[in-house]
Length: 390
Ligand code: ARG
Image (cartoon, rainbow, N blue to C red; front, side):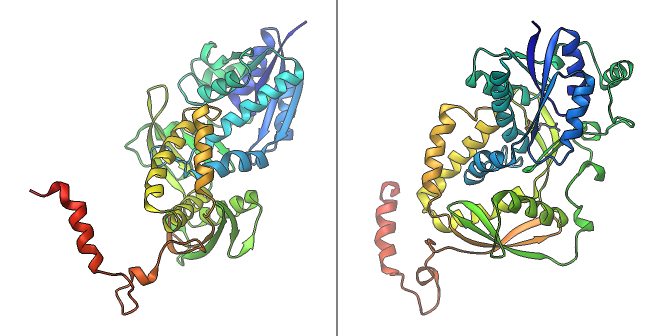
């Protein structure tokens, strides 16, 4: 009997070559395609896998699970890596790995395979997750061990073996896309001093090409979850898609980053996450209004850690689970509305309100409505400053 392997198949050059590479090494290949909202024709890509030599193809729509179980927790934790990356790719990997394991169990396969490079974070995320969920599965990472030294050599291999591909022209970038954002690297971006060429960006307009008039929106939240745009309720998935369109049109959500990869390399990457930045901006504003100072400050540290855990592939770790408990507790009153202004690449908050707001106008005001007892300040300062008095 042939050894069976479940491969995370994307339909691109690498994983297409891998189907054949594995088949030529005696494996029965089961190709797994996940729909995370990358807006590709997965049926067509599945047929491609079969043509190349996959024995079986699974196509799974994981959008709802991705949104509910991965993106929403990331929103509640304001999860971002090194202040600039909203973790679209990093959030998708543990989910893909979860299903690789599930399909492996269903198919009684002993192996899972992926097309990640040995220099990146994604291999770590997929393998770590698979190991946590089933330590007996063996992992094959062909890109780390095969003979091809360049993309050209792979294309040559694909041509010779008649692998159907649409690489008629050289693809200028390496892309990873899902509903939470786009990650773009390679090509012209490898020089960190060079401005990203216009064609690097996939879903956002350049500021100079944006509408001349700002767009105002009101984003509504319930318990930390974005639920409405301009008082109209949406399913989270649809809300994100809508904000991606709106934000993209106004140039919101670009970031140009030099980041620290897990494997110790610095890399230059460009990201787009219009909905992500809009939602994060609004969510943080609402937290600022509702959370008391101690909790708000403490949560910032937890949020940073949470983002790191996602980046490091530790989604299914005990610490991440424990932090979820904390974050859940902090979101109970994150309900309200945030007014935002989208304008030529920027997204700024111009108003916020909540039934749980801790902002008290009668304390903050400098008018005759003032209820703050200024006399109390004197004693407070004396006690507060006592230890420092010379
Ligand atoms: N550097 C990002 C991360 O580690 C994205 C990796 C995938 N990027 C890509 N362009 N294929 O999460």
